Amino acid sequence: MDTRPAGQDYIATLDLLRLAAALAVVLFHYFFRGAAAEGVLAEGYPDAAPFAIYGYLGVNLFFLISGFVIAWSAESRSWHQFAIARFVRLYPGFLFCMTITFIVVASVGAPLFATSLRQYAANLSMFAPALGQPFMDGVYWSIVLELVFYGWVTLALLTGVFQKRKLELIFIWLAISALNEFFVGSHAARLLFITEFGPFFAAGVLVHHLHAHGRSLPALLLLGAAFLLSCGTLSVTQHWMLNEYGLAVSQHPLWAANVVMHGALIGAVLLRNHVRPSVLTMALGGLTYPLYLLHQNIGYLAIDAAAPLVGKWLAAFGCIAVLLAASWTVWRYWERPAQRLLKTWLGHAVEIVLAKYRAAPGRTQPAE
Image (cartoon, rainbow, N blue to C red; front, side, top):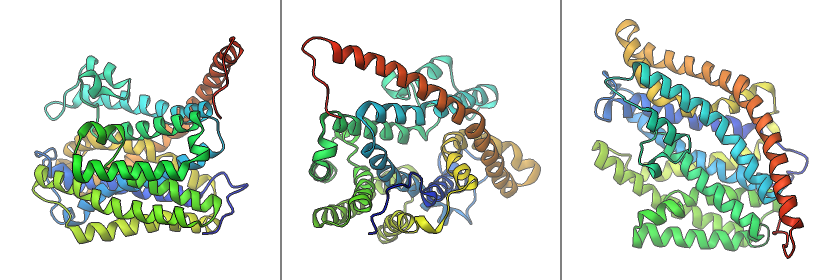
């Protein structure tokens, strides 16, 4: 793999891939899950469902991309700079979109959905189930896994392990994932160590390692192991879907889709110089996070309301178009300004705290 990342701090093809992943999840929810999940949508899309069912793999693709991007971000930052950057990246958009979802559901959600101020308050933490409340929107579960991943990377940066023992750390993570998913089956370990989706995050980290540092046999072997392990852990979601919907993608198409996802990430990196960064690619990448957060419950309500008036197909695609525009608006006029302000404020606050900590007698500076 070509190793010339220096001087390039943005890869447009990754934003396009991120948009594809987000749209895949949207299509899954609207054209398959909406009718399959206890009749959330009044009308289903049986013609589209056999294709839309693959869209849930957009989440796995997100995790692949995240592994690459987080490894990239971590290489050039200290542990506290990394933690601030990730918090600033996630929380402003989450806060705004979760609040919008709360307002919509509280106003017009009945009888499909219900909410409360207690649920809203719990969701402010991003870990609502830990506080005894459901997520404001079902897609938030994947954000929690992202946060757990960020937490481990922050700890690895703090201790210096990420910089010095990255490949060894990934080997241990993959071993824990295999042990838990195929032998132990601990739900606590699945959350704490992200064992079901860890191979996807790890593969993304390894693709970045090869991109930034060149080919090496250990990294290539670990990437192969992560891919094979991810083929196995895909069966966890497959079994869940069989229990939940009575239908799931069969094994061989799942493996083929996994090849496509891994190939798409590698292809996006290899083709980075063929798609020039632009205002358009930045906007398309920027709107994916708000789109992901807003589309499910709000989309179900909108489609059900519009379908009797314009037909179910126009309702669904019209909803997607409106949400794309709304998501761009959130990114442009809320997320970007809020991120700049929050990053500046948190950066100053953390530097003051760390300066006092380092100045205290007997204190030593953590590994950067």
